Amino acid sequence: MTVTRKLRLLLCDDHALFRAGMKAVLSEQPLLDVVGEAADGQAALIEVERLHPDLVLMDIEMPRLNGVEATRRITQARPEVKVLILTMYVEDELVARCLEAGAGGYVIKDAPVSQLAYAVETVAAGGRYLSPAAVDKMIDHRGQPIERTRTRYDLLTNREREVLKLLADGLTIKEVATRLDRSVKTAEVHKYNLMQKLALHDRGELIKYAIAHRLVQVPVFDDLMEPAPGHHHDT
Image 1 (tube, one colour):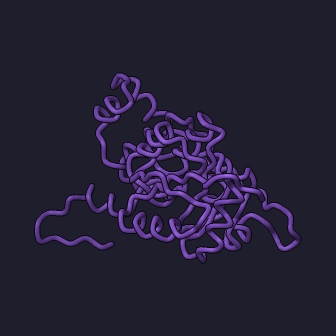
Image 2: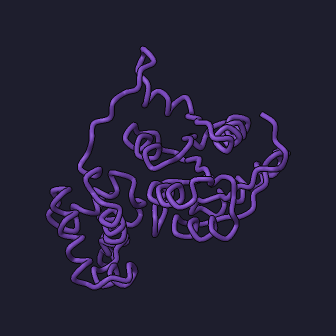
Image 3: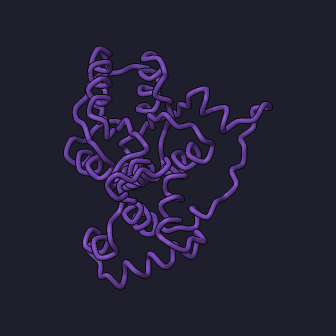
């Protein structure tokens, strides 16, 4: 592949130390230029518009807007911007959801730097790259794609997925309405519809569902439970 200029990268991960480490490592690659950072998916959307990167290196589990939904919005609004998922998770449903959202690749965080650099260049050029562990989840022993069973989550609209994420993050329905710039009644309708589609009956079930599907970070659950002083619940 002939490269006439450095590839402009945007790092999106909610851990500042990890971003700093990745920036230091990638800056040593002669053809890569880290032009910006974002601590969550919402910030990534803003930085994509501001910086016009060639590629976004995207984590999945983040506050405000997770990596899957951020990927979907970036690739829909800016198809020229490529997204490479960089995560510690490798469940088959998660890999499939990221690819369906428009990601060009999926790399596990313990990958060697050389593999990550190759993945970045491949995806930026319009190709696709999956870590060996991700390939194992998507391709069977005969080399054929594994057909993913559709889940209830696939039934949700983009707006319902956003409301689900915000509710699981601990926002009240009024705060959700404010965040989305919609009426409380509209937010309530989205909440009702998503609860029906997911067969959930209360906020506790909603939070457990969001955690199980990597839509929120596990510590959120502890924050929402707010145990009384001196009381320790099982984790």
